[in-house]
Length: 190
Image (cartoon, rainbow, N blue to C red; front, side):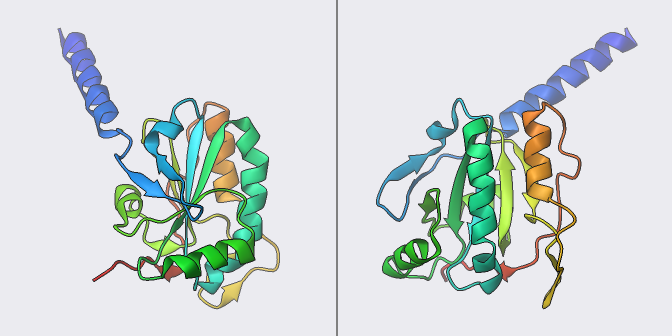
């Protein structure tokens, strides 16, 4: 009898967890004017949201690494999106920034910060990795290049985002599902 209650409890908790992992309902334009929704996530192995900002020097220094990660994992079924972390920046300025820094994946405009709210992202740069269902699998830093504000390592020794993606693609749990991201605050409209 105890086993049956345990099994039922486990199944109920799994069912609740599955319902809680529903992809957010959104339709956001990218800087090229194309609309994106969570429907694009179907058939992907993972979705990476990279919260960035045009005027955050820390975020801007990570663009080449973000492009390298996207290029390395996109062919393996991982979707990548940059998400503008400052809702107050005019569209023309964001478009110029995307062109100037050479983003190789869609750069979403999210004036209501729906994706930041959904994932719990608070800083730029910060990575959120989601299952296609919307379940949050990883939230945190890209790597350990930043030791503290104003302190950068000469040599990166921990590759948190890559480690999370490698684990997910191997069918394993992410070893450290939350890490502390250092950077500029995500700015919301007043």
